[in-house]
Image (tube, rainbow, N blue to C red; front, top):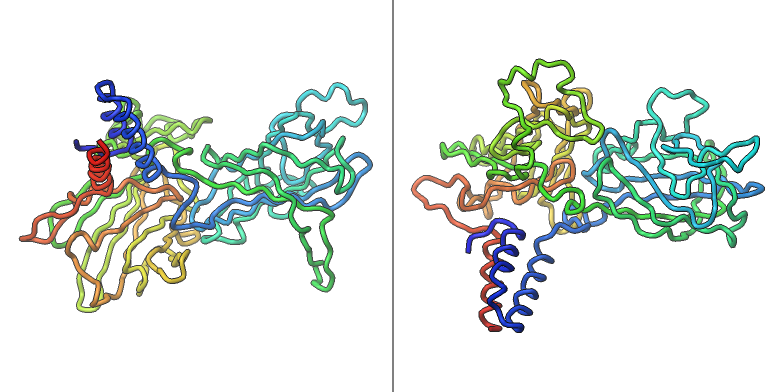
Length: 456
């Protein structure tokens, strides 16, 4: 039984379950559950195990009917940022709270404030939705770390730009630590789905330093909300793929067919189409629907890894990222790669590079990103829709080899989403040697079938 995805395997097995006995069905369902646990992409990211977005509420003063809080959003993810049109934060009030005013952000709807006379709140909705202000707003509407259109850099790429904040004045609420009810049911879009937020938890109050750094002040009350990302929730299909080539084999291993799903296959546009000269063709849609170039893989982004040159003590790889979406350009893009020789990078020529060491004893992962004002913007599909660089690495004589696909990356992430790799058996191989290896899914499938056979 040849399968490429968990969906393929489950559909094939479930289709045949009508012929199984009750005991056989239980065994099969158990095996599928084990497979799903192994295969699905959960909120835990092994390359960034501590990555999350933490939303901190600091109550800085009490008011006659509520409080004033500073809300700070910290992106602690090493290589996953929030790009335009930016973050959207929502929650539910525990009681009948209203928002009197906001600085540095705004709610998307005011709601029904008809019961108020004279001073009308900024928002009366039970479930307010908050967005960042755009750059260039009047000074009296700005707050520190606000007004970036919701764009939030990753911690690994730009720690200063990974923070967003605003101030909110809440009314009809508690006026002390004992009477305040924490908001609940937090949601975060960044800018699409994928984030899951936990409940608000009271934590020790934040300590602030005055501008002269000679005095400490303290928030009256602080609570945190932690949001984690799951690619499985964000999209049912990958959003990028990887192709491979080498100097020692003329074969180019392209991205797998329909690597990112072929649901947009009938709405794609050919690279030589006259429609590309039509006004507004590159204008993004409100729902961020892509307009992809027609390819066999139908991915918005392709990462190509080319083993270029072999020296005596070093070897060189060329990395190219191509955008196939005519309606999207990627600001602050990041590329995370896992490869054992990234523990000895000698030089990266046209990208910035930072090692990622989530586990101190293992140094096999690195993050590439564009140089500011040079290639930190990946343009939309077309002649300028690509960025590329070369990486020079020093060989470890005990581990270096070109055999069995060792020279190719183990995992590749673009903007924090894992890219679809081609199956190992299709990798370019050394002359006079047969391609070896099989995919992890094939191995696991064999193991599951063995479990079923033994328990039969």
